[in-house]
Image (cartoon, rainbow, N blue to C red; front, top):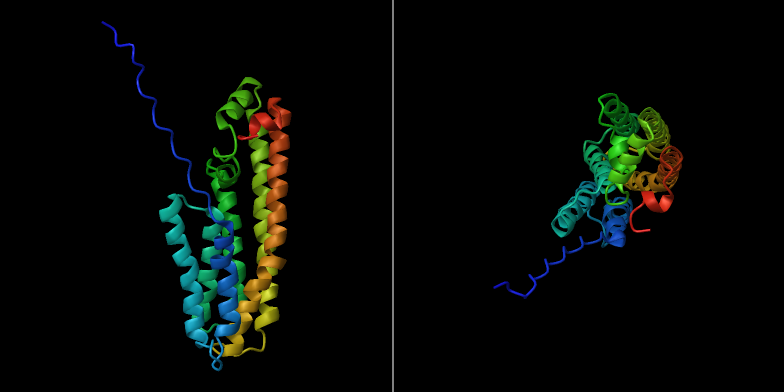
Length: 245
């Protein structure tokens, strides 16, 4: 005899926890910059000295990344880049480098990232594609099916190359801005002094405005050009391409 009782419904997959954007900004940017700017002094109740200020400023983004991993089990590329920047800035600040050496270091990381974007494209696994064609945001299967059906693979490859060049260009611009900003704030300061540590804090803080905003504009421009290019070559609408719309 057939059992009329329907099988129990499968438990719903829990939605992944959303990242706390305010906590991200606080621990990766605002607090490290504040500590470098004000706590590196040798006098005052808040003063811990230049070296401890740098150590604490480095520890905050590391602690945040560990916390965020246990909360979401997911790596955030932008948070990692921010953490590496603070680690390099603070870590090399402990080495008491000259302003010129520090400025070269500040330019080196974005140049390395630009090279990575270009190299991964040439290797056949574009980082730009991994970063922007996010399965959490886009219907990748539908996009790829439409590209194949419309015989648009060469056009798609050209679009990804243009996207790669846009993102690599943003990092090259960042390198020049980083170099100039570091020299502006650190020139004339004695490495290891509280003035030098405070200048690192100011340079880091202003970097998010002078450098972060243009890079964000480049990223948005690259993303919008990618969406428009996909619409043109696949015939899909933006609602078809993006999930949750």
